[in-house]
Length: 205
Image (cartoon, rainbow, N blue to C red; front, top):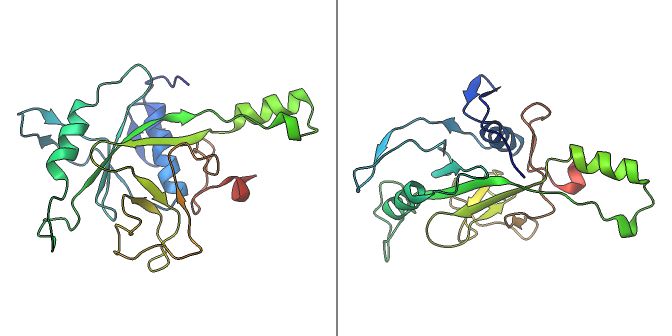
């Protein structure tokens, strides 16, 4: 899926691309607080870097990369620099270190036509208006999962150890951890979104 790098207005902010605006809309849908390009960082290599999103409550950066823009060296270096390497008690400025994610274009949605009686035109319309499934990868370290609901602080957010990065609590038996491209998650569009908890096929059908 190709999303053009067209400057896009959403939520009081002008983003450099539609994909960035859609990532902001998706974060809003999950009630995750974000800041857009809040800091210019000089990496150990001397490279100047402005990551796209900072999620202050989760100590997480997101660098959005569209189709045809595969270079992620800066994000990888930031991930290596800000990762926690403490053996016992964490002494990092940000407990647990900072997580750096690559936000990719969404994975396409494909309707299950084998188990449906919908006509072709309806299936085509559904697939066209579905935002697809959020796709991300970790710039450094372990696989990142989206914790759908922390039983302690009730926040959604990414995690590498199934512990909430906002409050340190662990997900309860009733909470879900979603993988990248999980078909239960839905990517939002900046021009057709509403703020709610992590959007799943059950809650947005």
